[in-house]
Length: 435
Ligand SMILES: CC(=O)N[C@H]1[C@@H](OP(=O)(O)OP(=O)(O)OC[C@H]2O[C@@H](n3ccc(=O)[nH]c3=O)[C@H](O)[C@@H]2O)O[C@H](CO)[C@@H](O)[C@@H]1O
Ligand SMILES: C=C(OP(=O)(O)O)C(=O)O
Image 1 (cartoon, rainbow, N blue to C red):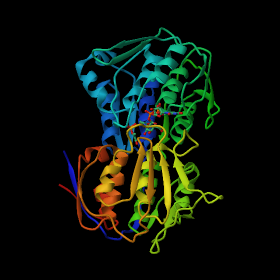
Image 2 (cartoon, rainbow, N blue to C red):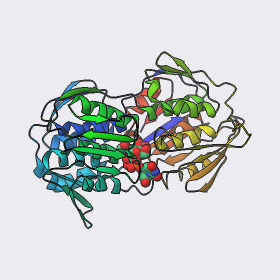
Image 3 (tube, protein in one colour):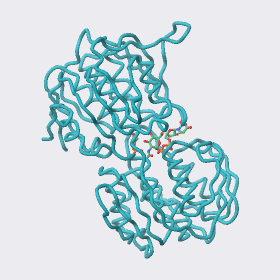
Image 4 (tube, rainbow, N blue to C red):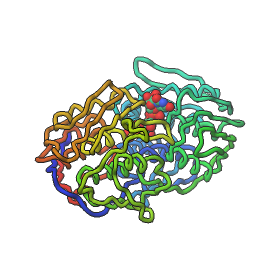
C-alpha cells in the first residue's frame, strides 16, 4: 500500500497544466478496436487505469506504438479473440471500470464480447444493466456466469433499434454507441448520457466514418455503416482534475493558474465553485485563481435559503467533483448541503474530515451539511486511508491546508486517475513525498 506524507499549511503558487481526461481516454482507447486501420491518440494521461487498459489491448493483439509523450498509435488488424476466454483476461479485465467498454466494439466488429465484472471505485452499487439491455436491443444474446461473474454477448449481425435507456449511464451510452455504429440500419438512443467524454467519442467515431447525429444531446441517432477507418484524436483536459486544482487553490489560499482548460467544455463546474464564493477569472483558455486571503463566502439562494450542491447527469454537475466541493466548503464562510444523488457510499469519507476538525453532519448516505470554518480554525493533520479516487484527492487537499504532517495510505486509488500528482504538486510548492 503506497503512502503520501504531506506537510500542510503552505501556500502554493504558479501554474499547473491538467492531464488528458481519464474517463474520455477509457472510451477512446476501447474504440480503437472498431477498425483495422491505425488510430493515433494524443494527450493520453499516464495513469494506472489507462495503462491497465492499454495493457489489455496489447494482450488482445492490438499493435501499439509510442509516438511521443502521451501519444500512441494503435492497429487492431489481428485481434486475438481467444484471449477473451483466458484466465488472464478474467483476472486483468476486473482491474478497472473502463474495461467494460471493450464489449461494445468487440461485439460490433467480431460478433462477441466478454468481460468479467469490472472494477473501479467502491462507491456503492454500480450496475451494468443499461449496457447489456442496449446490446440485447441491438439483437445480441446475453449470458452471465454467476460463479465467475463473467458477462458475455454474442450476435452474428447487430440490427439498429430504438431504445430509451433506463438511466443516462456514461459508460453504458459509450458502449451502446460503439456497438451501434457497425449495426445494420438506424439506432436511436434516447436518455443518452452526453458528457464531453461522449461528445469526444462520437466526434472521433464520425471522423472514422460513422454517422452519428445529435452529439451533445440526450437523443443520438446512429446510421450503421459497414466499416470504419483510422483517425487521429486528441483528448480534452481532465475536467475533474481542473475542479480538483480549483479546490486546492481555494483551500490553501494560493494564487494559481490552471492552463489550457478548454473553458467551453467545463459546463457547470466554474459556476458551482463561484457559488462557494471562489473567484475564478477567465484568461484566454486559462483559469486564474487569486489568493483568497480573506476567505470565500457561500452564496445563499435568492430567497436567503441554504444552498444545495447536487450532482445530475450532464449538463448537470458531475458526481466526481462533489467530494472535492465538500472539502472546499469546510473552510468557506457559510453553510451548504451537499447532495450526492448517484452513489450510495461516496460520502462516508467525511468521517476523516471530522477527525481533522471539520464541521460536517452526515445526514444520510447521500447528504451532508457542511458548516464552514471561514479559516478561523484550521484542519488538524492526521493519518487516513484513501477510500476512493476522489475522496483520496479531497483528503489530500484537506491535508495540504491542515496544520502539521498528515499521512495518506492507499494512494494507489489516487494514482489510478492523477498523473504524477506528487511531482506536479511539488512544482507549485506543495510539501508532499511518496514513501
Ligand atoms: C470510467 C468512467 O467513465 N466512470 C464514470 C462513469 O461511471 P459509470 O458509467 O460506471 O456510471 P453511470 O453513468 O453508469 O452511473 C453511475 C451511477 O449513477 C446512477 N445514475 C446514473 C445516471 C442517472 O441518470 N441516474 C443515476 O442515478 C447509476 O445507477 C449508477 O449507480 O460515470 C459516473 C457518473 O458520472 C462517474 O462517476 C464515473 O467517474
Ligand atoms: C468513479 C470514478 O472512476 P471509476 O468509474 O473508474 O471508478 C471517478 O473517476 O471518479
